[in-house]
Image (cartoon, rainbow, N blue to C red):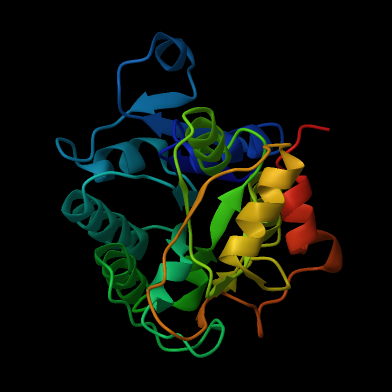
Length: 271
């Protein structure tokens, strides 16, 4: 049985993934802040990347799959990932790195595919690229880079933020000429489950198969949530349409693991 360690299993993506994988694999996770629930759970380890060396946990646990879903200080994350990469070179294991569509946020004229050159203007995008580049120096079977667009779903941070801003009668920021794709947290965890189960390797773009304007997506999500007359703050960061979308060309998943923007919008309501 595969032994999976999710670094950042107390966070939004990490926790959803832990729940998805726990019944199928020998699954472990890390958390940072003191938490009695996690302390009692034998499958969770407290880990603070700013104070501790991840290699010690890896040596003790010897996972075959490491999923990096950690958040926090960028420099500490980079250091932790360099240590993981060094450990991977000495051990038979693979890293699934949760990356972002933002590694392409400089390119604006078309959607981005797996092997397109990365280039970012944002601090966040540059940080993700740095870890991606370090991973790509490893043999391909040692890593999966999972580039993910905006994530929605019933209790996700983005949907909670929309509801909170609406309740406060505050404006919801939208980008009318940015063309994106998106995903739901439930579909993302299913896709990662498949990638782990089938020993997939390389780069995956895990967004919806079709594209939508950011303004239209948020408007339709507000409609689905039955929020009447939300206040939108329209942000124009360029005069022309701009793409921030990750589409697959080489590593396509089976049809049942693909998602459309309509399914993303539907996912914000608990059925």
